[in-house]
Image (cartoon, rainbow, N blue to C red; front, side):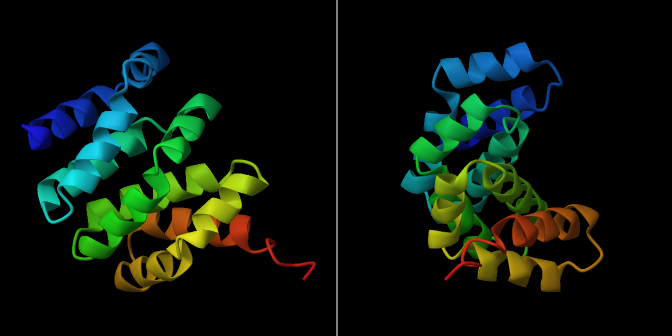
Length: 151
């Protein structure tokens, strides 16, 4: 059931209308997705559908806050690690992490603390011809590159 729920939320979140996305967030969709990803860490279908659904919900500061507060960063990084052979999961994961990294300094440190960078770098090496992986991987690297510049 979790797999189908994540797939349905993935389809709904791909709608361009922000009111649909906001409704998903308001009724706890992000929490349900992340919870399913944590509850079924070895289920590739749930992990991939969860990343796809979260990717579709990356559109507002509210979405960013809810993803971060529900441990979505960890869920996405773990999904990328467990689904290295899925170009779609890697692309979705890179997109989500790039979107989150555009948040404030606290969010950038949260992304960095999950060791997301090595995971993103592996995705970029594995999928050198995938535009989404490369573009968003570069966005993440750029956004996080100055975290320790003053150390």
